[in-house]
Length: 367
Image 1 (tube, rainbow, N blue to C red):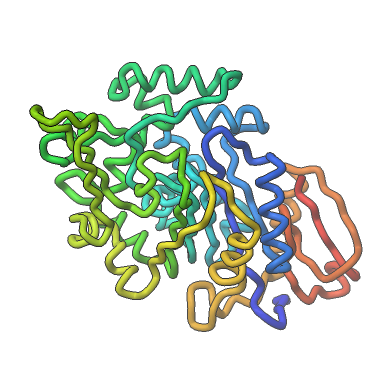
Image 2 (image 1 turned 90 degrees about the vertical axis):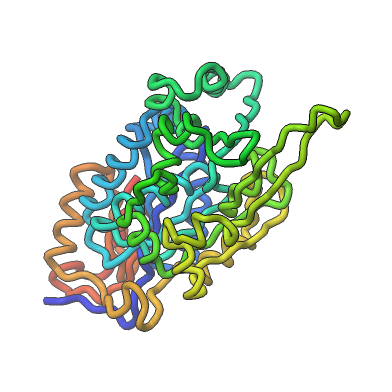
């Protein structure tokens, strides 16, 4: 029999953390808990690139983003919940937001994302590298290599931040030839090559909403305007000028060829009022519960009537059995008979179970 819900359940939510973080960090889990509290029944999933927190953190510095994105595509599309839902929502923190956008563009035929929200994500890349904590040896080793030869095959295929490093010609403000030729990620996913990838534009334009948050005191993504897809050209000072720095020219997204020629579908999104630029106080990744609450209430949650995922009433018995089998194979399961819920990683799906299938209440906690 088909199990139906009195109202559409929230769409599942995936979260991709930033550089130096990991999927099991307390802060990440707090965000997922808040998502479930705001929209009860939300199935949440923190993207992970390792078998444990330590290896996942290492993968945020060291790895080939082409392989990483493909692996995440496989993991989500084959997941018993995420792969069966009519659509999912996506939340990206810093580097994770750029990788999520790349995932949508490259894997949009296998994963249907309704809304993408990014906080402090370098959509136009970075022109300088961050400073590491004195005792963060992994960070120091990674950025030490980046400062050596950013365009070597060794660096571009192994060091994640190098793969969204972007350089402009000082004289013209145009992307450098070495960036266009050797960039392993950004030049491709921003469709900056001469031959454009129409699939990227099609997949990103299919979003119901794309929201980009910029921190007012951004101190990690350089230039800060990159988080709103702007282009920043730092001109050299004139030879006869005593100034230490030349003119800084900022080209907002809507004035860039990337937008006017719609390389990525951003203009199409904007014309549907589906592209939003939001500011938030504080330095990089100082996100308030107020901002997150706004996102979970306004941008995520149950499908909107007539929107992506609408008409979804829940899961049938065969799907529930498949979910249970999968979770029992990969997780430690804790069963509690408390209320009408569907199995979940974190959060629940509200359903009306039959007595034979669930007796009273079934909550599965995927740890």
